[in-house]
Image (cartoon, rainbow, N blue to C red; front, side, top):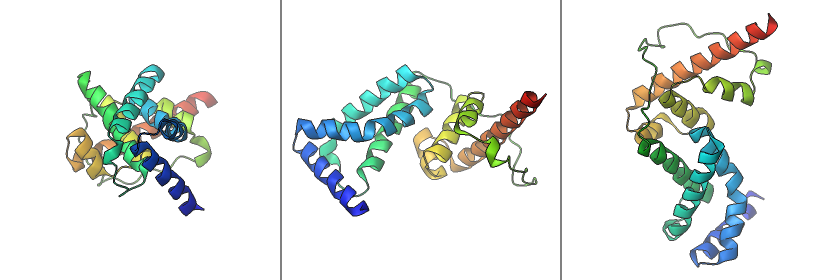
Length: 187
């Protein structure tokens, strides 16, 4: 079945490359919801996310002829969406702030994991809002978008060690915020 789905998408992309308007609409309908979710995680605002989604699709459709079927179309489109969001954040001259504490996490014992039942997407999203912008982006890119630290470093113009350490700090902060909120709720 997976092969059939890939063939359908391949045919749609080829139709887009030929300039067929219905194919563009179908591709948009297939991918817009998932790509909007990527945008909202980066932009942290629904209106900004909508703008970035439209900009990313416009860019992708203008350059669809450059898609070479070397990866899935979704992966190609997702990179465009992420680049669009990061470019907008940079354009706004957002000072990507990171955690200042440069203590090494490698030398400490691993903290006990929160129970899975305590973790939910909403709790994590809420806790992410307290992170500095740069750390939030790294956490998002690594955990939610599935990029590795090398890719993140390349996107943000930082080194891999910074990406790793900021991810660990963000993860710890999110755990602390969720644990604190759970304690506060129980009190």
